[in-house]
Length: 309
Image 1 (tube, rainbow, N blue to C red):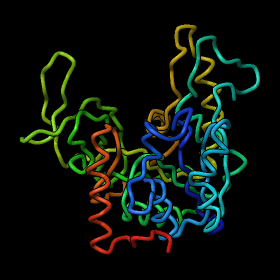
Image 2 (cartoon, rainbow, N blue to C red):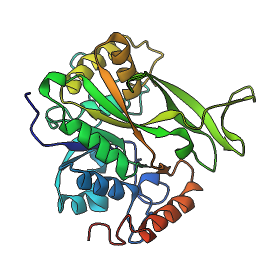
Image 3 (tube, rainbow, N blue to C red):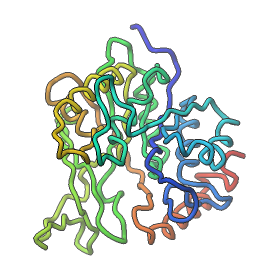
Image 4 (cartoon, helix red, strand yellow):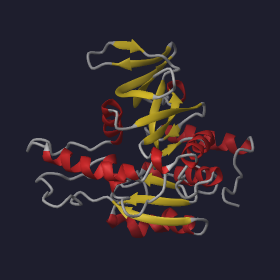
């Protein structure tokens, strides 16, 4: 078996954190006792699981501030690289449409890693806490991959009931799997709310539909191979070629891309079950419960109060 080298990289999508730092930027809100942000805990868990490099996807105009807030600290404990997602970073022959103000989505974000990431890698959101189990399972999967299996990916699957907010509706990719635990599809499902009777989908017409609390959902934590970056590059050209003038807000999104690869038979994705609870600051009111959750994890000995001590 021709294995990849033993390196595995954690890629953190942080280009959407906003045009300034400080108040109101949820990804950079302190949630730990010494000012730690959610990214600190994700990086800690990834390094503990065996990942040995971190790549931050940011915007170029945020680089100086980003390094000061978190990058310089992480550079002291592991290899760190930065790549940049920009609205006008397009393949040859394409120009940014008039009126386009935001980058092109998570697919373009990960594509920015081409040439920098040459080993199996995990992708996560900057503002989601995933728990230790997911990193261990994704790292284990990636470590066993051979080059001949470059189109065999994985995804951490969270129980829906462990990913809801007390303060409003959330959007989740609800997963279907086959009898072998392979992902069949991911359906982006909006406005899932927590009720006394379990989670419900609140529809635009005001009606609600119950959804199984034990359904597996995607929280955008993928285990991928460097060959996937080639696929992203070709797919981005196709995506841009099919845009109409009215599509100035369309996004090139990882779940949609991977779902298409599954359905065409070009890739397979194993769902790795995790029972950890997700935390995130979807709403401003969520911060209090996230801070309390980390306080409890520290009290239980899951984390040291001084995280990297």
